[in-house]
View 1 (cartoon, rainbow, N blue to C red):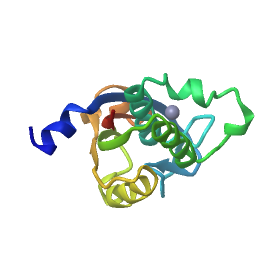
View 2 (cartoon, rainbow, N blue to C red):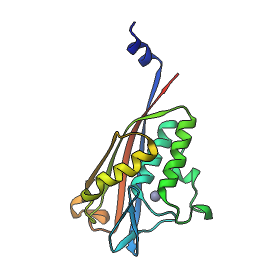
View 3 (cartoon, rainbow, N blue to C red):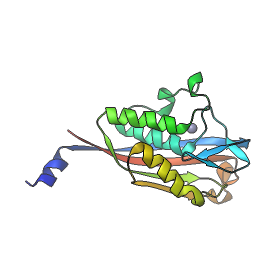
View 4 (cartoon, protein in one colour):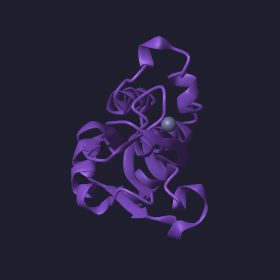
Length: 168
Ligand code: ZN
């Protein structure tokens, strides 16, 4: 048996999935993927409403088996009022590390009629990779083709999946 196979035999690999949605309302600023985006609306939430980061947090918590973002950072707790979701991601990553896991990759999808996401994707990846210590982050975006509330610009949602690994 070569070393590579031995490593594989001793690794635990787990997948995680996350989803989040917030309403768009008049106001500012809009935060997505840890980046402040010039736009006439903001996401209504207890925190800064960053759906992309919330979906990533939930995927990481799900992969480790630690529940969801609402359990760890309840929206009834004043200390999370208007908090930057980058801090929530940092805390979530801390829990993952404490459990002995490292991230293999994260793949995400943002669904938003507006604003146009593509100009900000590289900056989002940079912000996220600084915290979760991997460059294997994918961010994709789609408009929902004017279908439903998201397609009509009333809300923005995000999906995320991740793969994590631990040597045992
Ligand atoms: Zn959220």
